[in-house]
Amino acid sequence: MSDRRNDACWASCNVLLVLGILADGERAGHEIITILERQCDRTFAGHEGDLYPLLHRLEERGDIRSRERMNGGRPRRWYRLTRQGTKTLARCRREWEHYRRKCSSLAAGGETCARR
Image (cartoon, rainbow, N blue to C red; front, side, top):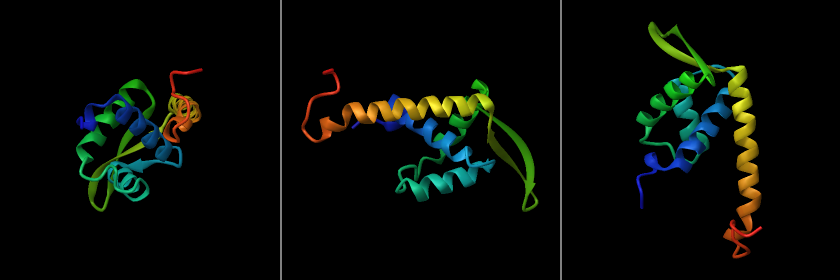
């Protein structure tokens, strides 16, 4: 089994998940991790180190913005979706839905994804 952190599918799924979480409002990094662990059956557990590089890439691309704010006497970085990020999220959701529809029969033993 390959290292999922180097898997393109793993990376694009994480983009979809993180942007989807931020669509509900501004979040701190630790909140994003908690939500991912709770709602994704601990799929992200043990991979907290993957989140911050992803957040930095999304910010460099202009999909999210961050700001520092005090929380419990400590500065924390908070992330929010940008207008571009909202468009990226919509595109990711469309692509995911297209992929899911095209390939759902594969899992059931139907035609393959390559067949049209």
